[in-house]
Structure formats: structure tokens, C-alpha cells
Length: 156
Image 1 (cartoon, helix red, strand yellow):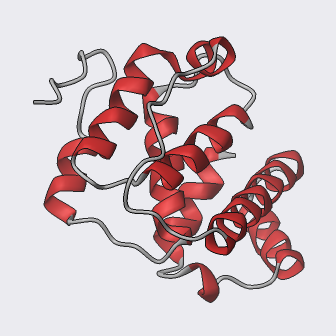
Image 2 (cartoon, rainbow, N blue to C red):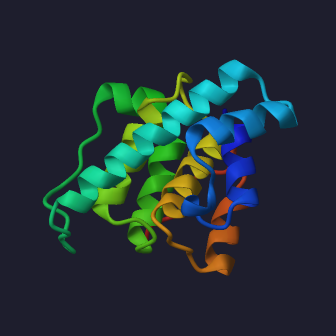
Image 3 (cartoon, rainbow, N blue to C red):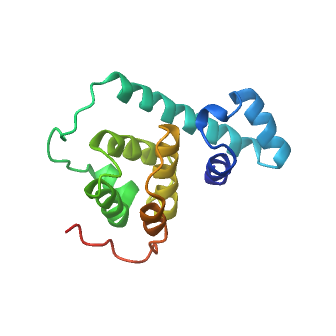
């Protein structure tokens, strides 16, 4: 599934440049992606679109509504390194609190525990892509080059 997400990011500059789901599925199949991967990726993207729409319907607040405590299931799925990575992105204002919640929800939708940092980065990338946001490329490249075995950087 993640190979398909990366392919979409690299192939289509904007999400609205993607063909509809049926045409996209045919194209992905013709390229050589497996049908079960295609279905999983398209379902995951539909979930992302759904949560993006829910966030768009809620009034944007620049201030986080409170302290975020991760559930045991979230901690198990995302892991300490992943939570540290999300906290870094929030601390440098690459993700607001609503985007953080979408990243967590989409990470919970992946059938992997704990999800690898590489895949979590793809989730963040797809979220920003789906919202038409381009982070500062140097900063984002630096974050993407963080070694998975490296400890998260301090937040201060």
C-alpha cells in the first residue's frame, strides 16, 4: 500500500490531478501493483479524504484545545519514536493539532504494530499532499532523513 501512496505523491503534483478511483485502480493495476494493495491504498485514501473533510467542517483553532494523552492502542501502534516524530512536527508547526489527529487516525488504520517511522513519514507526507500543503523542502528533507533507529531530537 505504501508503495502506491509514494507513487501517487511522486506522480501527481496535487491530489485533484489524480484520476477518479476506477481509472486510478486500472492505471495502478496496469503498472503492476497487486489488486489487494490497490484496494487497500484506495480505501486508506478515502479515509484520509473523509477525515480531511471533517476537519474542514470544524472551525480552525490555532490553539490546541488541551494536552494530548496517547491511548495505549495509539502508543502500541505508533511507538515512542513515532510519537516523538509527531511531537517534533507539531513543535515546529509543520502539523497543527487537527492534522496531528488525522495522522494518528490514519496510522491506526494501518495494519502494522508498531508502524515503522518510514511509513509514518509517508502518512504525514500524504496528509500534507492531500491538503495541498508543501512544507519547507529543506526542513522536510531533514525530517525525512532522520534514521529510524535514531532517537527523536529534543523539542527545545
